[in-house]
Length: 112
Image (cartoon, rainbow, N blue to C red; front, side, top):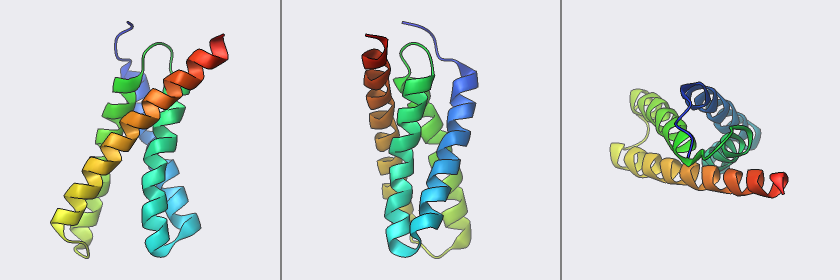
C-alpha cells in the first residue's frame, strides 16, 4: 500500500471545494445545499480515480479539510445552527470517504 501523497490531499481539497461550490451554485437554494453534499462524493471519486495507489485516506483527509472550511464559513454566516453544521460536516466527511472508495474501484476497473 502506497503512503498518503500530500499533493493529492491538497489538490483533492481544491477539487472538492470547487465541485461543492459549483453544484451549490448551479442548483441553488435548499436543493443546492443538498447538491453541494454530492460534491463530496464527486470530489472523493475524482481523487480516488486520479491519484495512484490506495487513496481512500487522501479523499477522507481532503474531505475533512473541505468540511472544516465549509463549517467555518457556515458558522461565521450565523444563519445555520451549529448542530446542523456538525451533522452536515460529518455527513460530508463520510461521503468523501465513500467517494474515495468508489474512485478506487473505478481506477481498478480501468486498469483491468
